[in-house]
Length: 124
Picture 1 (cartoon, rainbow, N blue to C red):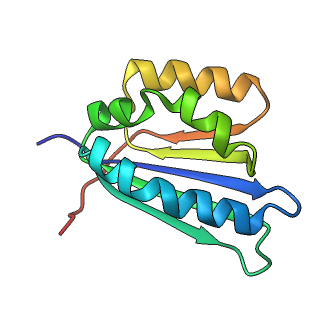
Picture 2: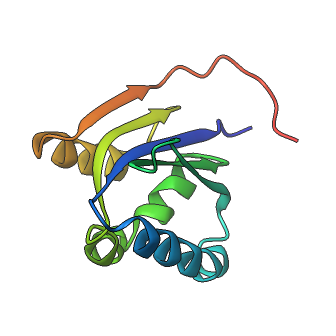
């Protein structure tokens, strides 16, 4: 059985861009749902002050995460008008293309943490 991957990214919402980001995010859900069927879950949470948003994605395996990240550079151009990445955490062993992407992101100053050892569990 493939090991699941959890991808969590925390962003700072740029000043005055909270409502714009909320609309942008909500508008992005249907196309992502349709075009990325390997993504098992995508959830977003704001902090109480509305200054940060955390996105949580669940994938059945490393290949599914790789597929999610295909085209991310292009999609991020619009998204980064509203938010700035602060920290990325990956739980599970990512594939080589994801690792390369994370090295590039980390070199830009975004904190990246990878927790590769899956101990077990279940997903309903």
